[in-house]
Picture 1 (tube, rainbow, N blue to C red):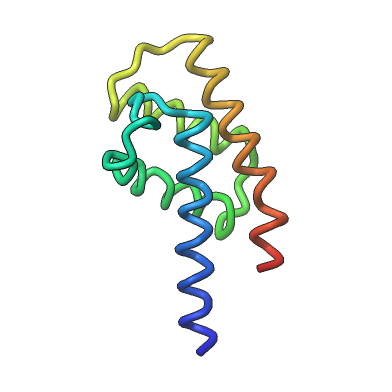
Picture 2 (cartoon, rainbow, N blue to C red):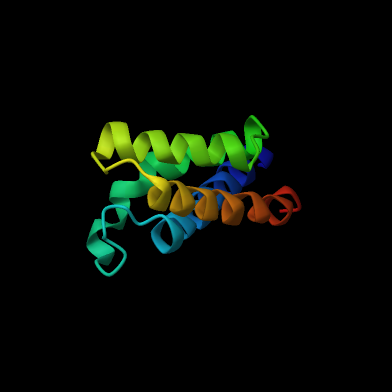
Length: 102
């Protein structure tokens, strides 16, 4: 039973991370299109692993988001994108204590 509960908690955590990415990091501009939200699932899953399993901090998560945005999605690099990534990373890391206690 604990394994099923762990999977449910992990799923909920990934969804919470995806919500943050949609709100703070929406580099694809899909936040207003619920049918497209799943496009961020792979990124949210990676960020969740970085957050909970690897215990990564804001800098590492921001770097991942920045690299993803520039290398995989094709966003133009720059200070504005770096700030978006840093803001999203801070919001994700702020979520960790809440996820730790579930």
